[in-house]
Amino acid sequence: MCGRALALLVFAGGCSFPPVDLSDTTCPCASGWWCDTATNTCHEGNAPDGSVPVDLGTEVDMVTVDGSVDASSDDAAVDGGTPDDMFVPTDAPPTTSTVISFGSDWEYYDQVAAPPADWRDGTGDWMSGPGQLGYGDGDEATLLLDADPNVPSAYFRTTVDLSSAPIAALLEVLYDDAVTVWVNDTMVTQQNWTAPLTHGGYVMEIAPDNSTATVAVPPSAFVVGTNRISAMVKQQSETSTDLSFDLRLDVTAP
Ligand SMILES: [Ca+2]
Ligand SMILES: [Ca+2]
Image 1: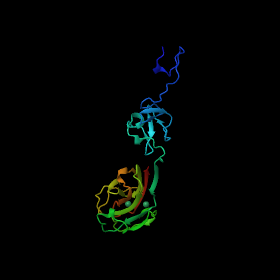
Image 2: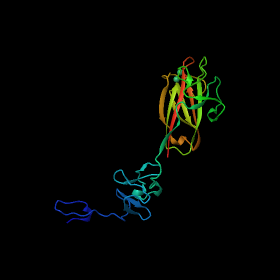
Image 3: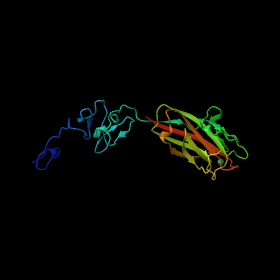
Image 4: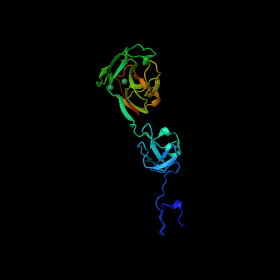
């Protein structure tokens, strides 16, 4: 005798059933079905707004408001969770934009005397020029002061306006000999940095010419609106022949 629960199976003895109609069964729904949260019932095919169930395995997962696939347990298609997690496939997928390119303009400070302690908050009162900034290698677009002895620290800052909150950001910095970078008031990376964050003092080790580092920046470091991107570069000694800085920033936003 063949039970209804085995409806999809065909037995060697010739007993078979047509596929079971799952219409109006309660959520969660099987793959290829969508959950009507208003009635807590399953319906075959796509949701009325055109969203497409995405089958990642044993549950039906939906494209979320940020364009990612919501495979979490609070997926409304699975367990009746938060409805605004689902059925928004018409949103454009996240896009990654280069908001600072290598060769972009930076305000810079390269003088012997230390800058004000709140130098990262200022704007408009420094010299400016495009990357690469520095001296001593012949690859600079903007030449900085090459004093003797070397000025221990050079400073760079710019701003980036964002119209929406990022969900990811990637920073690549070119430096010689050491660099600290901030996004607003968050320090996001230090490379080859073995000195206090003071104007005086050199780092202990030289860096190869035009060293680069790529780091992920926490999205929480950014704000919607104007963001201050700042960097401090240190020399290795009074006599090191070169100093280099440039920076690229990619931001991914919904
Ligand atoms: Ca150097
Ligand atoms: Ca260089």
